[in-house]
Amino acid sequence: MKAETFLPEHYRPAEDEPFMNERQLEYFRRKLLAWKAELLAESKETIEGLQHSSRNIPDVADRASEETDRALELRTRDRQRKLVAKIDAALRRIEEGEYGYCEVTGEPISLKRLDARPIATMSLEAQERHERRERVHRDD
Image 1 (cartoon, rainbow, N blue to C red):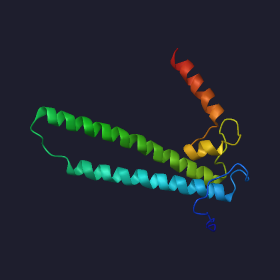
Image 2 (image 1 turned 180 degrees about the vertical axis):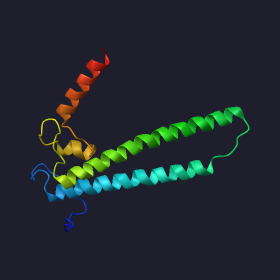
Image 3 (image 1 turned 90 degrees about the vertical axis):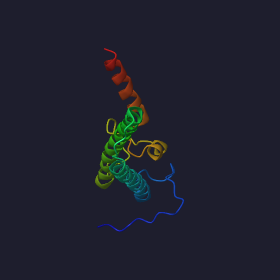
Image 4 (image 1 turned 90 degrees about the horizontal axis):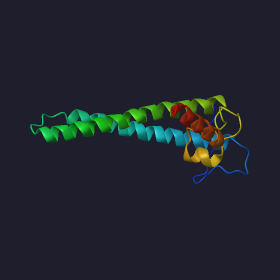
């Protein structure tokens, strides 16, 4: 078990420090863990809410509305479940020393992009190329 890295309270990764140094890695690790905890707490609330709201509603329109709400909530939770898997993958990349580097080009992903989307696996340019190719193939 390695020693915890000190992180000043208002620390933000900066371009003028070495890329993916211990402080930056710790910053993103904490950010990812906090995001994951938030998603898991929301998921727990949803499960509890669904268990308590399984009542028999006599009005057909009200029942349909509740079923629609439930389906939407479950779709949202499924997206969040996939997001938790991506967060776990990002945490693994931190542990393996691969975090912050584009999986396509091997180049560093910008700190601004990682701060906005800490699960990013591609640089902005590589992501845009990927999305353009996807759009072209989808139109076929």
